[in-house]
Length: 396
Image (tube, rainbow, N blue to C red; front, top):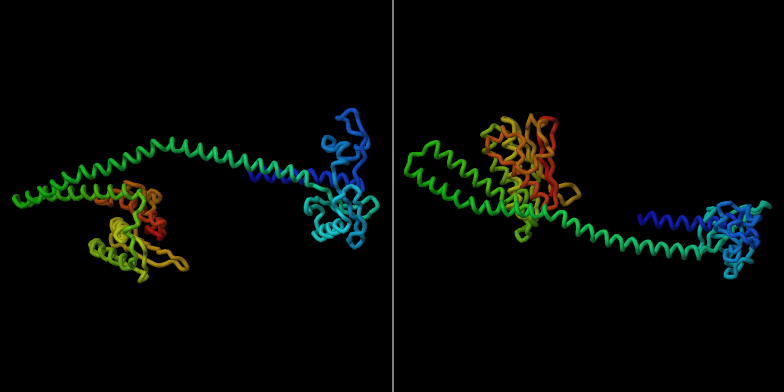
């Protein structure tokens, strides 16, 4: 809006002065004569030669308030003579210098200092340039523009203040609900940890006194799963907080990633999955090594769980050329990739294929992975590969 108003002021200013130059040019370098009229709404007869739209703008005083001069040009477009009868602040040398500048610009109209000029041809066939002093209209336009800018700044400040106040009021219930949700998860963790610990401890005692059986094994398995779930919920709730940087150290990301990948080799072999790696060595990164190992582990764990049996998992790590970015990719064969809602895989508690998780997934891991990547200002994406594989890529 501000840009539109400023441009509008500029265009209107030019248009007003251009109308003066047009009238002078149409009258061979002079303003038409005026006679006193008792009826202000009725223009004099000799003014009818000017465009009718000028009637309410030009009047008998225009000749006394308009300062202009005319420079006649020769056949070679050099200043030949000047008419300075309607201005006192311009000398003949200055007038000719302005005319030369106007000719050199090669445009019919333009501004030179505070003078708006127009190159025209007289009724005798001579070429001339009329210069009209536009300082008054420029001053008025500048004053209007300054007022517009001030109004813009004041109203912008008021609107911004209102937006901040009302947005805080509007978001407050959501923020409070979000904080309560986080606090509930943390409180639930503390409340559940103690009974879980007691259950698993008592289970150890029971197993020492009673012969181990499938029921005790089920209790231990489910207790451990519940303990893992509670811990992951706490991790997820803390991911939304600002990442502390006191644990950041420079470490070899290549070695950390290779170590993490090797931990999944046994799991992959059990499912007859071929796990291959292609990693650039000695890539260092500044961050929390434990957190980034967890990131790699989440993607590898997801790949092994969802990879087709006797399928393939490919892990690559490289540095982007010309950039200080690390690119990590995990691709695994998955024939049912078209059935996945890829855009939802990073949603919390969303499980793409419940039948393939064997009861071990909670739909939290990829959400944690995304939170870790975003805390480092990176990006993580997922896409299908030729309708036969799924590929996760993150850039740090």
